[in-house]
Structures are given as C-alpha cells and as structure tokens.
Image 1 (cartoon, helix red, strand yellow):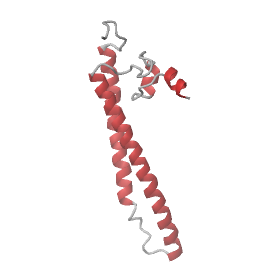
Image 2 (spheres, one colour; image 1 turned 90 degrees about the vertical axis):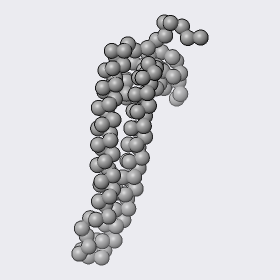
Image 3 (tube, helix red, strand yellow; image 1 turned 30 degrees about the vertical axis):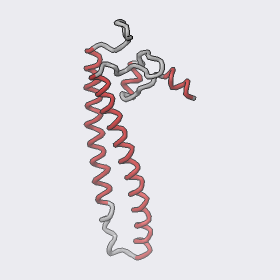
Length: 127
C-alpha cells in the first residue's frame, strides 16, 4: 500500500521536465531525419566518372558509412523511445524517481540525462 508522502517531483517541476524532454525529442527526431537522409544519399556520391581504384576505395568507405549511419539511426531511435517513455513517467507522476532506491534522482542529472531511471547511487551499485 503506497503512503501519501510518496517522494516525487511537483507538478510544476514535472511540467518543466516535460518541456525539456519534448525539446530533446524534437531535436532527436530532426537528427534522425538527417541521419536517414545521409543514409539515403550515400549510394549517390558522384564517383561514377573517377578512376576504378578510387571508386573501389570509395565504395568501401560508403559501406562503412552506411553501417555507422545505421548504428547511429538505431541509437537515435532508442534515445527517442527512452525520451518518450520518460514522458509517460511524467504523466504517471513517477518521473525522476530511481527505480532501485525509490529516491528522487538529482535534478542536475535529469537535466543532463532526462531519460534516466537510476540515481547515481543506484548506478554505482551496479558496478
């Protein structure tokens, strides 16, 4: 049974975090679009008329950049998903509460890592 003195951030603080997270989601989605458009443009890098050796080298680097772009895209999609989950925690008023200790996560940490679900204390316990 939950007690009435549950530790949580105030509605005003949650509203501030919500704005911060929404801005990060917008930026992350914009970055994801850039990554995806770079990925789509990779195959057309204008080396059709250059020497065969350069072309072979260039195709190798295109494969590398395709792989790193796809890794970037995957990481970016996970970041967006984590941020959206943080918005859900704001709605549930559980945002900013460490899932291990049940204590409030430091506000500075949440400003730097708004999707954090662990306090520094809990993170250090994992090591």
